[in-house]
Image (tube, rainbow, N blue to C red; front, side, top):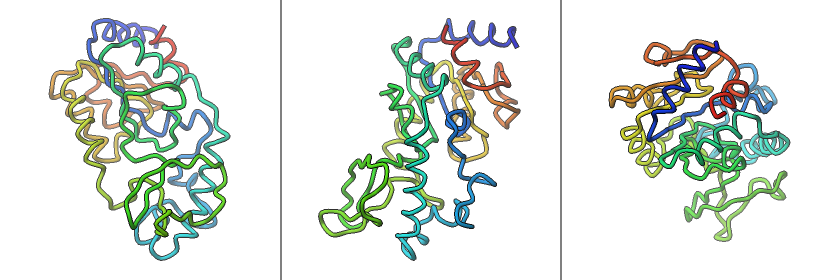
Length: 240
């Protein structure tokens, strides 16, 4: 383990442009369920049944009750050592970009500013009628479903199953992926696309790949070093 950490530090010490890619494993260390698999069951519904446009059109109140429950869970979560280390890395590298698959907003809470939230943000709302986007940080929504000033229904500004990622986030993601010389991949399974393709693109462009995860993933095969441990234990060591 220590030899792998030392190798990762050596790679980072020569880095000019660092990109960090994070997945649900980072948030899980703050006690936030992944909302998929056994952890995703809510009132006998699975995430795949609720996080869709068709489910929202059929029963927006039900979908919002689920998201309201999620917001309450996330609000209670504390930043973990991995969040804080990644925020510190942004200050240490002049050229830095964070790509996250998480929608909880914890990276921003930790202090990261140069980031793309690939799958959206649970605290951001978007009107299905006028398209206006706004933030609502009320822990428990006063009105379900929430209504826009134009009288349209607000939806979570989340990328649901079957929807395309926002072009703005994709552009920033692919630009940084093509330019970085090191990519630090943390807490992601490497099976959810298009995020799973990002490390492979970076590798093809000549970047070094450092992986921190609890177990092997498809990314392991291309990683220059893979460290199998909790991100909250490894990232502070790398930062230090």
